[in-house]
Length: 239
Length: 87
Image (tube, rainbow over all chains, first blue to last red):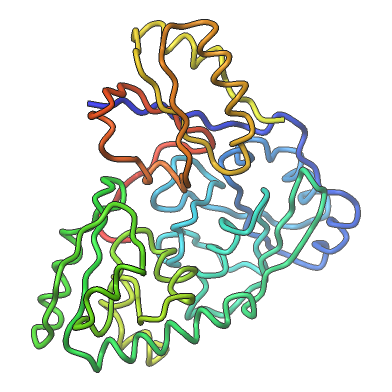
């Protein structure tokens, strides 16, 4: 058996908000703070800065993470965030957009709060809003409608052990007995291969949920995530 | 800028007598691969491979490594992934 050794790759420099960034955050009373694992254990200075400005900081340990403040790219469902408090905005510490976009996705169906991204390397504060995922949400809505209407569904399973969700996918059979489900297996999912199976009308992704969001918007064929397929009617009615 | 914990990595390989190791790095740390390989090869007898493609998290573990007799995968930039039923 292959052993796995995980190294956080912790950021070694002091993480602090610059005056400009702090100035923009001052207007909020309560901020939910999250970070990538490289930064999540080095937030003491930022937390002290926010406290000094009388900003209440809250956070959580989302379902698949190991520690408080940490966020993963797959944290795209609000219930998985385990965040108890109402917040005025989110603050993400780290570089890139992959993780902070999860904070935007997890607000689908919720009253939207802005997501601020502070990059400690560039000392830059940027903002993500609902507009950043507008095209993705439109495509998702259309695909959900098609899923409910169509009969022949392709279920995509990955052989990656961390992302394999065959057992969870069986709930589709129970929930939609009138549909025909075809189960497809691959290591890395590539939508080019969909063309070889023209009888499939809608695809359901059971692997990383970012495939059904960020990637699905570029696919010709309709593709939705398993958890959204299982709640398609509820999602479309906005409940 | 990032703590690669190379001392820990080398000690782990020496202790486990690892023969073949695969390194997986998130995109931002991929340029550090040269330094990591050189350090491992200087201090251990392990053959080192570098994963070319994406590695989005600890959930993203490559398959088929047994064929190459890789006995250790080291991922940087990730920690324990707690798998649950569904997402």
